[in-house]
Image 1 (tube, rainbow, N blue to C red):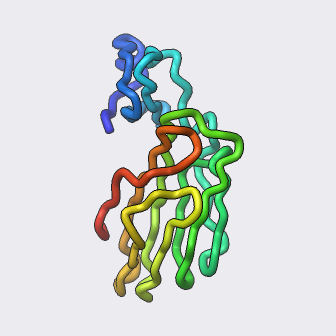
Image 2: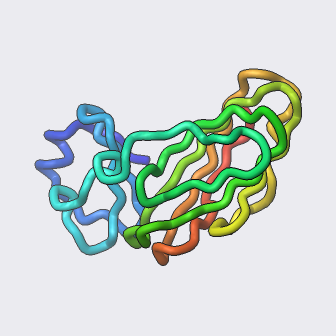
Image 3: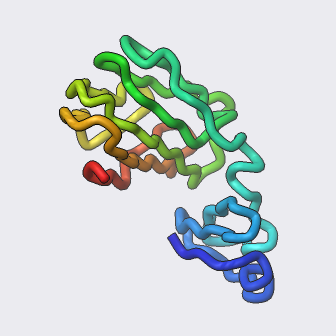
Length: 152
């Protein structure tokens, strides 16, 4: 993700390629390109959808509404399956992030309905490790996994 301040982005006003994410280090928010719209006309993602939310419940099954929040934090208390409820239909090119903190109990996280994932995430046996999983929606309906970090 490219990062620079508001004045730099505004003066350059680039047309960002479809799905390209850039971060404004002054406003502390990001924009996602659609391949057509100049930077200054793109909405800030967190301003449009809400900053973040904590996933609840933390065990069993959780259904998340991606029409309101696009960044989720999670510390699991048991094996968890997350389903996506995309309502309303997302803007094409929307991105969602999961920030997962390991509990140290080797719980497994599964991305279910509404997601196309590379597989489950096993948080491992060390407490306090962080994982980031990124999803992208090219069609406004399904979230496809595009990136995943190992434990940090």
